[in-house]
Length: 318
Ligand SMILES: Cc1ncc(C[n+]2csc(CCOP(=O)(O)OP(=O)(O)O)c2C)c(N)n1
Ligand code: SF4
Ligand SMILES: [Mg+2]
Image (cartoon, rainbow, N blue to C red):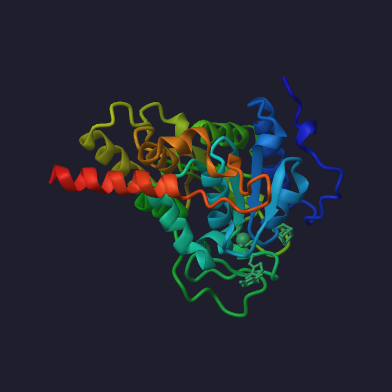
């Protein structure tokens, strides 16, 4: 089996000592190695933040984008070339603060992209302000007063937005995290992996000591069955409701593991392929953009024709 060394770069990994991001990076390198994905077929898209440095430390294609815009960059890449494995590594501020609109719209599309949310409850890179996942009334050390705003629950919002794979991992349980990453990557559709990530420099509330007594594994309960098996409306509603109720659990006990998986939803790129069969054989990234003499080819005519035909068919059905 390929070793994770294949995915390491020779850059000095400059996160603070004991940062949870080290565990996330190692789990990701191990997951990619065990899945035997060639680095040239993997794209890691990062936003801005400490988490955003992941793309520099992973030997794969990487885009270190703009704060809050990891998802739209990733969407463009996946739509242009659906054969790539596209992963977003971004912070809780990035994905649920400035980028929250993209997060919700992404769930609706069910694009086959994996969102790994580095959930440290702070804006690490900008020195420890509260992020959207810090609870109301909590105060981490750089804050002058306790948090005045309520939190955003990443699991609940992902379920409500249409993500078809929703799970939570912990940065220091590297083997479990690696397995969750593998499951997310293998799932065909939009995946959220909320990764609880200690930030020893700025978050003095959610430390490894805090998590030690609170975290428990969903899989330990043999009756917990988060995977949609038949795809009926009733089954989906039942599993979604149970996942939502479970997502509200946060306090003395914090669940880690898979909350919900629905493999029955068509992906966005499959929908496009149905509209235009050409898309499946020659996606945009593989089309020529210029003729031999250098004149640009505008390649949207076939797509437009297919789309017009589709509209005509739909209208005729009415
Ligand atoms: C458009 C824009 N707004 C604000 C910033 C400043 N900024 C950089 S990183 C960051 C927050 C990072 O927090 P998070 O996304 O949680 O990542 P972490 O550092 O915790 O991994 C902010 C506000 C920016 N770079 N760009
Ligand atoms: S500030 Fe926090 S999240 Fe950022 S590198 Fe340091 S420990 Fe990690
Ligand atoms: Mg953060």
